[in-house]
Image (cartoon, rainbow, N blue to C red; front, side, top):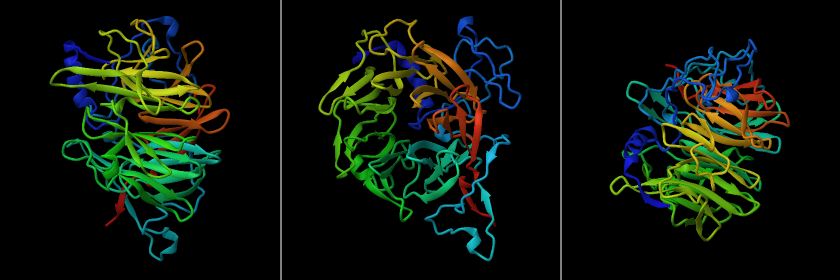
Length: 465
């Protein structure tokens, strides 16, 4: 929907700072007030779990820990978040694999050398970006950057890394060095593994149309990864990536610069690229309904010169775009994260100061509709359930009941900055923690931690001098 709303200029000015990286951000969380006692969440009484610092507005617990984000309140993207300290969890799982480094790099396993190599870690987290499950394998990609808190600068010291784990217990199976830096998504399609990468930022905090980013195709047998569709063809680096596994079509949001994020369709069989006309700022998420062959794209466009706006969830059927919401001219709901449960779209909206989950975005036009969460929250679907990942302050993972539209439970992730949730088994899910060197298996029933994969060995590092 195209419209002009002058009073929103202040909110969008703040957004320029908050989301400059074209990624998701973590900022200091405000104190939480209980707005409705019936919706307040109870803290877990378990002595071996961190107290949940509820991000759902309406928590009444007086014992909640105040959120203390380690990110300076400059609104930098969470891909530039200051590295948190190592997890204090004593439940870390030691990798039983003989592969301890990048299996395709020139640094072979230390056991093959007569001289032990000592490394100096440059970060406390390898910055996991995405998880994928296929068969009995859990795929994880790591961005492996170094953040300088004094200069607020990010350096991608190493290329990205793909790690393969046994999905049942987290045993490390193998690692493969990626061809590019700053990977954003991993997908398994018809037996092929694809990794989308954003690459490093340019001076305008966008990306260039070059061969330093794009879509890689991984050769699991030979433990290599090569660029399959380069940024020269796509137009830049990929900030979001979704796939229709039935049609073998991928949909990529291309981060040209802040506020200009077109979306392209990629035929993974041929590598051909087609622009989806009409999307101006597709940074509001992409979700695919394979059953109906529809693509949902969150458009957050605003022209800061004319204040012209196109804010809606756009639905693409392969040839044309329609708007999901029939919103009135004065309605302002910026899509931030879109996920499908079955064919039902769930939309989290955020204006970088408030956030709300809508289960009926198409028709909800009342301010009382939806459920409030922290402004930097993302959605995930696993085990046929909807999860809300809050990345503000200590951060948390919540299970949302889509029948009653209520939060079942919410658990703190100890400044972990959750990035994704995928199925582990019928009773548990794996949670990717971007801000800690961990992947946690948690119970769907109550959110309690079952196992922890230690990912510290994949942090950016150099040979100790």
